[in-house]
Length: 166
Image 1 (cartoon, rainbow, N blue to C red):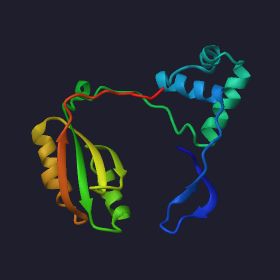
Image 2 (image 1 turned 45 degrees about the vertical axis):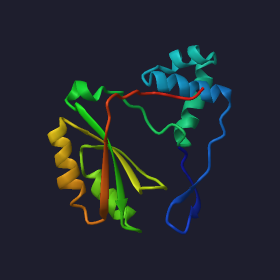
Image 3 (image 1 turned 90 degrees about the vertical axis):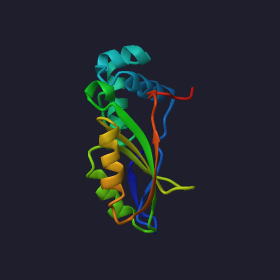
Image 4 (image 1 turned 120 degrees about the vertical axis):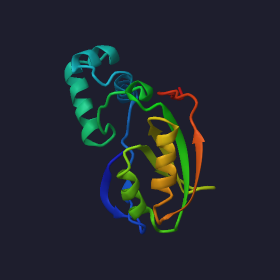
């Protein structure tokens, strides 16, 4: 969630990250923008009860520090023709993440990926038009990647977005 400090990479090539120090106002700004990323600075300032100049300065700092990495629209997958979703876990060859990551990014149906520790190595959120399209992605694309040893697919019956602990 934060940007590299330029301190240098860890031995395995990941840049060190330093968390941005946030106060209550920063957190309220982030929460407001999570709910509505289209808020104007004026509306944002009113919602978090600070001046426009303060809201603008804080928003600029949060963006330039990497705490806020961008703004996006939330889309209903089914409404845009992606009626089937699944989490696909991958067991992969050791030390293959860089190559694998690039291959996975090239598959349009892969909407999220994470390198994880535990029973499997990678978890993907795959969204496809239907079960036949999902089958194509898993059996003909993912399993054809040389770095992938095994896959396991779990269908998503219902998506619940924006669940946050308070």
